Image 1 (cartoon, rainbow, N blue to C red):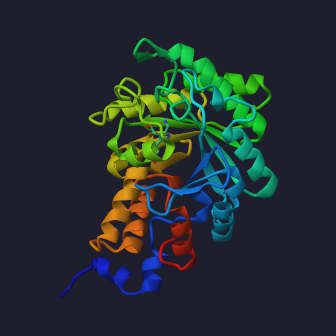
Image 2 (image 1 turned 90 degrees about the horizontal axis):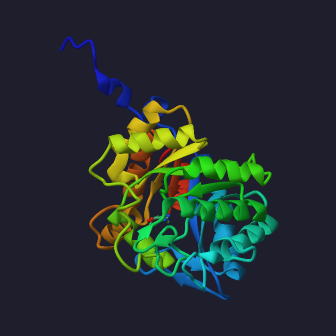
Image 3 (image 1 turned 30 degrees about the vertical axis):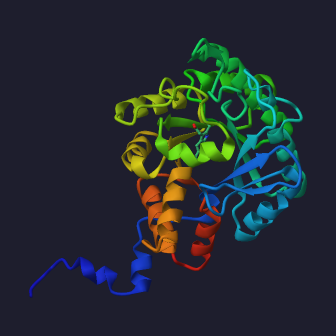
Amino acid sequence: MDLLYRPRRLRTSDTLRKMVRETRVSKESLIYPLFAVDGEGIVEEISSMEGQYRYSVDRLSLIMDRLVAAGVKKVLLFGIPEHKDACGSQAYEEDGIVQRTIRYIKENYPSVYIITDVCMCEYTSHGHCGILCGETVDNDKTLAYLNRIAVSHARAGADMVAPSDMMDGRIGSMREALDEAGFSEVPIMAYSAKYASAFYGPFREAAGSAPAFGDRKSYQMDYHNRKEALKEAELDAAEGADIIMVKPALSYLDIIREVADRHDIPVAAYSVSGEYAMIKAASKAGFIDEEKIICESAISIYRAGANILITYFAIELAGFIDEGKIG
Ligand code: PBG
């Protein structure tokens, strides 16, 4: 046949296929979500997330050693306090679980970059992401608390803060608060397009952060919307976000693509607990090849335009990069 174009020519060998790859990934862009819990001697498996654990500070070396050995040197830190109250005061305590964990990691694993999740739902008795006024979350009152949390994380040594609350105006207000406290070099990774998603189910079990009543639809986004995500990203970028995030990842690849196309700041994607749990469950049932599905789904997120991936599979992915299975 007299064919001028034969796309298959570039697929004839592994060497060639790897040479012409359009998407490259590196361990440097992987972030591992880490759950630290108040108490001692705790290594508790999260039942809906096989292979993921909550650790008390004295047991954190178990996971930190694995991360460092795998070359995953960035964590997104979540704290699970023993005591909760209406205004989530453990979130900004100098000796709170996150603050103590930061100090522990900085002392023992100085090469690890610490990003902290800034939110109130793990700390409030009602499980909502802010201060309540009646049954609704009061946006403007919540901002002052979020600022206080972010500054206390920075003071404990956090390298970056990541507000996940979805209050309006939080990025601008947090930037100002950090700057005033002397932390103008601490970047903000904004959970910009964060959808009200059932994919967070396993996380809420892990963090004990399910709302005691109602849902998060008055602050997190409606998944029918795409323009609204662009607006949120626009606002966060204008307010000074250094990195913008889309969350969840796999059902929102279209949003990742559009946000990445429109912005010239880095885009992160968070492949959330439900995505992890589905892959784990299907592979345990023998329905899918876990390794291949982890690789394919991670690459799809990068291909959609993400520069940074937050994933519970970070250690596995680092291994696959080392073995040349992806990369
Ligand atoms: C806190 C927060 C949540 C997640 C990250 N930060 C839960 C929620 O918004 O209910 C979800 C992460 C995951 O599912 O892996 N607001």
